Image 1 (spheres, one colour):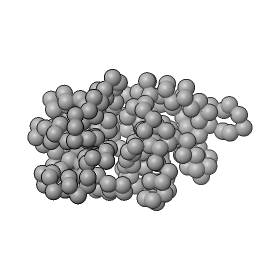
Image 2 (tube, rainbow, N blue to C red):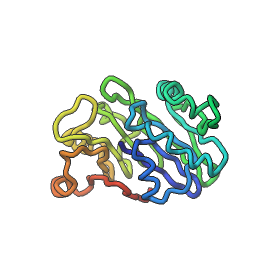
Image 3 (tube, rainbow, N blue to C red):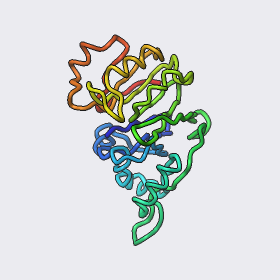
Length: 220
């Protein structure tokens, strides 16, 4: 149920629309969303798309959403009323298929992205790399330790669901294994389940590996 927003001037790019996105946007006083990019189709990353309506009302302009063909086709079928006019309610988003490299924003507010496809159990998920940072939400793909694009980053924000091994998410031992190979300056663990206590993690983790929390802000 995690999302992240990248803010560069007036350019605000939201990654995933979790079911909690409304509360998180309000709690963190997010007043603008320029566009949305999706990692994959699962409900805990997409079910909050409807909650972006106030941003459409505010700007009277459909919000561009981006994803791979599987994700975009899934959303257009599942929540078709958000993409095309079906009743009296106007559509609020516009679908876009992303390339492996793309940019969002204008001039000095532009954010350049590179995507990598990784395994998330039986489906694929997208890794987004931007501003010397990578965001890996929902994956158990250990082949990333051999990906040169992910080495020596400033920040590596990564899924770490549980202590025990899981069929579609990294566990704590696996992310520490990844850390030892990719060597980011800082690794931030997200998507934490209830068995990963925040204070316990602070005591156990290496100095440059930290657990995320709601409202966490970093300067890229």
